[in-house]
Every structure is written in C-alpha cells, then in structure tokens.
View 1: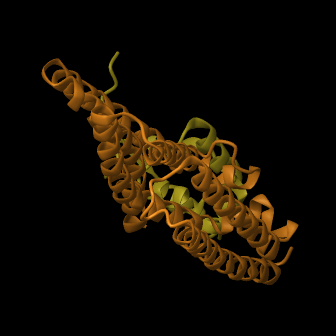
View 2: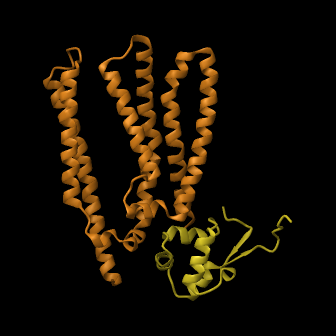
View 3: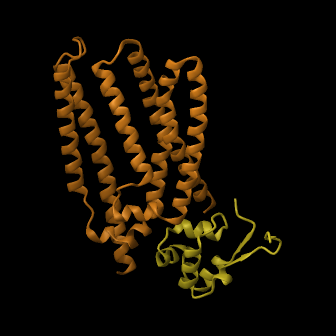
Length: 232
Length: 75
C-alpha cells in the first residue's frame, strides 16, 4: 500500500470517527430527552416513585440508547483496510491523546458520581432502600465497571489492543496501577480508622474510595502521556 | 526525566538508516511516541524491543545502547 493510499485511509477514518463522536453525543441527548419526557409524562416529579413507571422509563431509555449505538456503529463503521495494525500504529498518537483526555476527566466525573453515592449511602443507612437509591447505586457501579474496562482495555478489539499493548503505554498503565494501589491502601487505612469511631461514616466514605481507586490510575496515565508528548 | 545510566544512540542510527520515527515505529510494531521516548532516554525499552530496533536498523544492540561509563554495577 502506497503512502498516499494510507494517507487517504487515515483521513477517511478520522472523518468517520469525528462523525461517530457527534452521533454518540446525539444519542446521549436523545436518551436524556426521552427520560425527561417520560418522567414528566408519568408525573413522577409530583407522585411517589413506583417501580413500574420507573422500569418502563429505564427500559424505553435503554432501547433508545441501544438503537442510537447500533445506528452510530452502522453509519460510521470503518472499512477493513483501516483496521490493519499498520494504520492503527500510524494513528496511534491521536488515539493515545484522546484516551489520555478521557482519563483526565475520570476524577471530575467520578467525584460527582461518588458524592451522589455518598448521599445515597447516607439515606439508605438512615431510612432504608428506596427505588431511586437502588437505581442510583446500580448506575454508579455500572459506571465504575465501564470506566475500569476502558482503563484496562479488557475485551477490546485486536486493533485497539495494539495501542494498549504498546510498550510505552503499557509502562504508563503499570505506573498508574501502582499509584492506584497505594492510594487505595492509604484510603482503606483511613476508612478503617474512621470506622472504629464512626462505622456509618466509614460505609458512606466507601464510594469515594472506589472513585479514587479508578481515578488515580487514570489521571496518572494521562499525566505521564502528557509529559511524554511534551518531551517529544 | 532521562535515565542517565543508559547511553542511547538510536537517533543517530535511525537518521543514518534514513528512517523517520514513524517509519521505524511501523517496522518494529510500536507507536511513534515509544520510539521518541527511547531516543530521548526517557523510556528504557525491554530487551525484546531493543533487539527489534537493532534488527530493524541492521545493527547490534550494543551499537544502539550502552551503559554510561560512570555506572557502577554491584558485583
């Protein structure tokens, strides 16, 4: 394959990926709008929340999300020649930059989610489980799992794995995991000490520790990647 | 921060071979950033990568990497 041909494939791939990002944002907006319309339609703002309407809202919003993701994949699927190891490595700088940007957002997103989950834990310990508490904590756990998968590259495609398995990026990830291990260990000791005097506070602090355990490796990888780019 | 224990002559060997960082990266199967950080001494490559780089450039590993003269190895 000539250089010009490779340039054309990379340019085409970038256009498709930009389109994909726009469609993902559009899908998110559609899911939020669907939930808003349905919640208002069920008058759930004024009435006590019940499982049936909540299940319907969740199911319909999930359907919208699945339809949006499927349409996005179909409309922006990459041609086979763009998925070759050679093209992936050519585009690796950009992919690693995007990954690092996403990782840098982890602490911000997860701190907001962790704060919400701390409030949920406080309410649950105080008054027992309610529907929104179940959904809130389940949503937090699903997000944590999703962010962990993105961080580890587990079950990613063969081509994406090339980026994750790149020797430099792998060393960044190792350093990130080490930083995460120590931050979680220190956090656990603090929570243990807290639990000796205020057991309820220790339980409420656990979502923060989980967020720290995911955010610290992500932020470390992002900062190391940024430093490597600065040295380039 | 570059590792002062290692002397890296990768950039000179690559330039001599008439390759860009991206071209060498493609030959070895790593990203361009990996090549760049190895050249700057910021990242110390594994033995496998060092051997791969030497093979891609048609030189020995010792021609690319050597220990700094003032490095003392524990006996």
